[in-house]
Image (cartoon, rainbow, N blue to C red; front, side):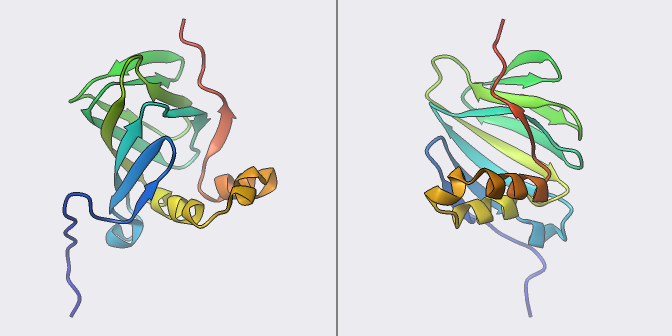
Length: 155
């Protein structure tokens, strides 16, 4: 008989260690029947995520450690530990490590689920795949990621 719950210890869960962050999937699409995905993202000093939006899914960020600057719907804000930020579908956003911050850690909730599956596909790709614009666009379309450009200038 399979368990009706999931238990993921510290450092557990499928994880993806990239040059700018190390993400752990704590609650997957399979765990929630597609309702949401919960992830722990460990940001490195060079982390930045360009301007983008999602047509269908919302994101919620809860900062655990460090400081992250978010650009959301034309506004810049600095998120310190204890900050919670919810971004509904259709809202443009980007984020970058706050100046002088070497690392940050945050929980992320994606509703509906699917971002964990996006990471799993990225984890199987080669460098050539990442450089194939058509392949990347198809993957972004599949997982509701609409890239809009680089992180906006902070004025």
